Length: 445
Image (cartoon, rainbow, N blue to C red; front, top):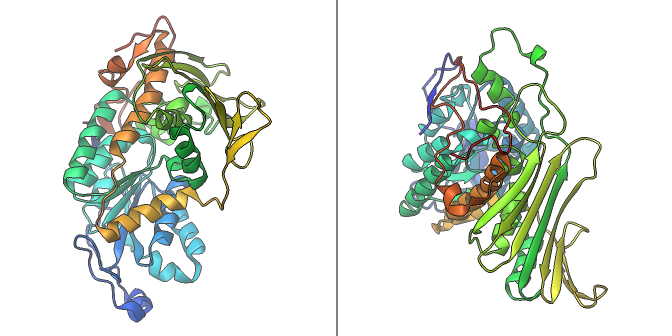
């Protein structure tokens, strides 16, 4: 497992305060003061939430966690720097409005900074940990949470290399044995209109699935800054972590970090059974200083029954953008993303609509947390571990095929020994990541 060296952290305080301050206790008085959570909580008991990774996604996830339960309270946060913590807490207080004094109860000693901040947070009495750091940190963070008996909301993807995926598979089994919740950030699995579409798919509404084509064409997510903007004295590790999306060891590359949502829907369609093999193309069309990721991929997956799945993604400015899914069956075709609602059309008569979603769509991001906190209350754990590992590995398999130019089997991919990042992550340390991959030259490991 990757080991982290914290470096100098400006916050070393380990003292803790009970979050039920005078204002909090007064606000909860009508329903009874919240007790410390021990096992499945009863009505009125607080569920204490800790957030690791205070960027935009983390802030959104924390707000959804606070909205998911009347007695969920954010009591601890962690990040590599104080600035995102301050911005996160300010945004959450604004979003929570009149409830902010009750819901956002993060005292200064519970704001942890540095590479070891996640462990300091886990060592507190939080009940649920939200993991929204760059995915290269996910395996050790998740393992530490489960070791400490915390429920977890874990953003996608769950790793950036195969050793990380295997580690998470072990951790998910540990969570199951401990009856801990492990809910993933593969949000489409919690979107009711998409769930309904896949229910139709699995019930035979399109006949036998012949092919799946998914697109994830977008603009660049976090463009790599010029090397000249790197502050003097900034270490390799800090530079790479601060620009995490552009380095495969931290972010996983665009297909693993972003287009993995499309890959996850392919996996879902195939009942999370892996393909036999895949081939892929990809590369870097628009040069960038530093970084080692591609700006486009196209992967062809081959399944045991002869079905083929095609996933294409691109992140280049000024191009056609689309995020859609086309599932071609023997009798019908399911289309997602070409309109507000999924639709199934008759293959023999495409103008004939066989099915479309009817009803009110709900917020899939909120639904993830609604189900997590309901499961905690009921004492009926959710464990998304295997499926989130499968989908991450499926995207990673496509990346391996594109990087090497080789056909890669599932067994090769899941057993890969390639570790992309440093064995020890020292905030002040040096690390030279692998160069931009060259198909036919870069070797599979």
